[in-house]
Image (cartoon, rainbow, N blue to C red; front, top):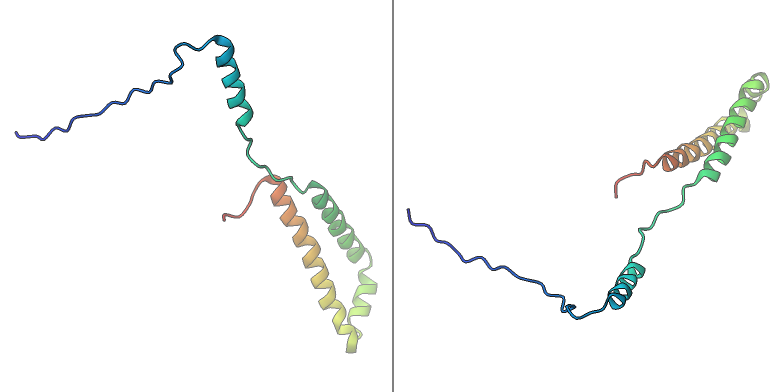
Length: 112
């Protein structure tokens, strides 16, 4: 069996601090510790989540507590046909903003 063996190179790292006093080592550790940087953590939108959650809840409560008025107004026809569309957009925006902020507060984010 003929195997080719390559020599392994081993590097020895010498910091050159053999004659350094304890005070100088302590200073170098402090400088190293100060230079470290903590990772960036974005703030969680708890306030926005609570705001949009309250808006969503109050909008649904208003809609279901006044269902007779809503039904009568939305079925008049003519330009009143825009009311259901505007209401759907408003509910979609408010509920979507609440759901998005809730997922951000829980720590669920989309991959980038």
